[in-house]
Image 1: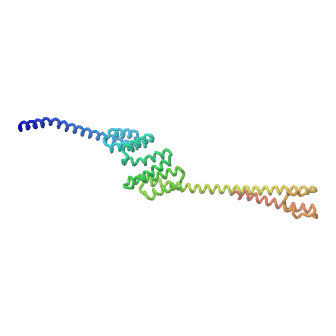
Image 2: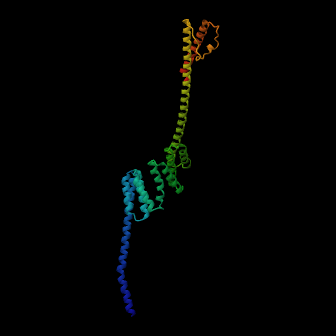
Image 3: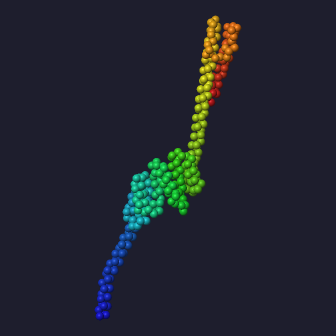
Length: 308
């Protein structure tokens, strides 16, 4: 009986050997296939990186997309899709970039690549002129990361810079100045420091220009007021002079003339019934000469200095 059991066990072991060998071959084949897929993924991804660095963004997007399609794990898939998005942003295909961002956030919500999407969405909305939305996403990105390494610090500085750009485009210059100054003071090694300094100078120049424009407008208004005053005074003098000249002409012709109540000149205030016409004539003539000189002085003053 024992001899028969040993024989059965021996036979069963022999029968299992081909099965075990087949399983081992299957595992080896799967492993080899996986290694082959990984190798193809890496080659596609490297090709995409080279094309991206050469500014051949359409071709780069195609290579990254192929790498995404053959990826065997979520990490590679997320990485490839992230670079597809960067390529789409580079050639301004914002619609495709937004759709891929949605897919990345839906499929890999906790990925580090997904976290950076807030920054890139902000860039898209800025480029499309949706400055309020862009501000929200840049703020969301800044709140989600910390200055843990130089690359992250540069991205945070860039987010602050783009927030300044949004406000600058909205002509909120004082608010934008704070963000530019923050980049200059807190991120001195950032590539955005130089352009931020330029924006600060530009804002200060704009403020000076606005002050000068306001001053010129005030000066112009004052000049107009002065001009109107001079012209009014000249017209008044001319009217008085014409009246005096008319009176003198009438007296010279021996005509009697009456002083109308509407003529308000001080020369008439002292006239009495005993004054002779010759006396009135002499006094009118003297006043007309003096008024003519005053008129000449006023006109010269108006021409030479009144409008400065």
